[in-house]
Image 1 (cartoon, rainbow, N blue to C red):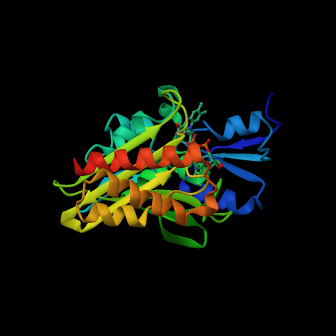
Image 2: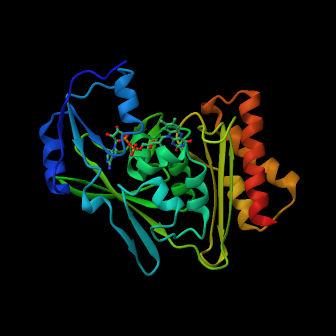
Image 3: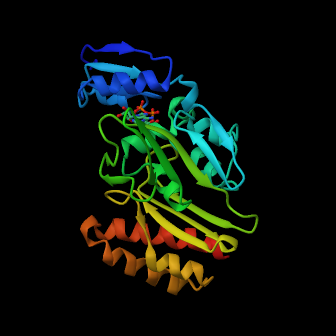
Length: 277
Ligand SMILES: Cc1cc2nc3c(=O)[nH]c(=O)nc-3n(C[C@H](O)[C@H](O)[C@H](O)COP(=O)(O)OP(=O)(O)OC[C@H]3O[C@@H](n4cnc5c(N)ncnc54)[C@H](O)[C@@H]3O)c2cc1C
C-alpha cells in the first residue's frame, strides 16, 4: 500500500519546526528517520496531513561531552551510537544495545528521538536510557521542560510529549570507571524486536543500581526488588531470580503469560549475572 497524500516541509531551525508544529493543530507529524512513521503511513495506520522533516536540523544533531553527563541530540542515529561517532557515557552499554537494534539500514536512519517518541514497548532506547537514569529535554513555543526517561513512556505508543512538543535531546549521566552493566535481548532472530529485554546498571561510586525490563507489554519496568539485590552486590542466582519474580508479581497489570514471564525472568537474571559475575 502507499501512504495517503500529504504535504511536506523541511524547516531550517528547531524554532521554525516548533512554530510549524504548534500551528498545525494536530494535523502534522514530525519526520525524523522515517523508519517507523513511513511504514505506519504506508499501512494507513497514520495519515498526517503534513510531514515536518526534522532529520537535518543541526540543533538535534549535537552531541555534547560534559563533565558528568553526555547530551545527545534527538536526531542522533542508532548507527552513530553503534560506531561511537558520538561520546559514550555508558562504557559500552549503548553501542552494544544499538548494535542489536533492527538492521544496519534501519540503524543508519533511525534516531533516538524517534524511538523514544514512538514508545514502541519492545524498543531498546526507552529501557536503556531508563536504566542509565537519563533525562529528556522537550521543547515547544511554551518553553522547555525536563523529564525522566524512566516514566517518559506512559503506555503502549504513549508518552508524556504534548502535541506541540519536540523531543530535543537526552542527557545521560556518565558511568564511573568501576561501573558494570548487563544487557540481554531475547528475540527470535537477530534484528527483530525483543521478546524480552533486560538492562542492568551498577555504579557503586555513584550509589546507583538499577535493572529495567523492556518489551514488557507497556512502558519499561524498573525492577525495584532486583535493583536492591544488585545494590547489595549479591550474585546468588536463586536470590536474583526470586527478586525478579517478586517484581513481576507486582506488575500484574502487564498480564504476562507463563512464557513471557519465563523469558523475562531469564533475561533479567542473565543481565544481573553479567553485572555481578
Ligand atoms: C524492520 C524494523 C525493525 C525494527 N527493529 C527494532 C528493534 O529491534 N528495536 C528498536 O528499538 N526499534 C526497532 N525498529 C524501529 C526503529 O528503531 C525506528 O528507527 C525508531 O523506532 C523510530 O525512529 P525514527 O527516527 O525512524 O522515527 P520516525 O519513524 O521518523 O518517527 C517515529 C515517531 O516519532 C515522532 N518523532 C520523531 N522524532 C521526534 C522528535 N524529535 N520529537 C518528537 N517526536 C518525534 C514522529 O512524529 C513519529 O510519530 C525497527 C524498525 C523496523 C522498520
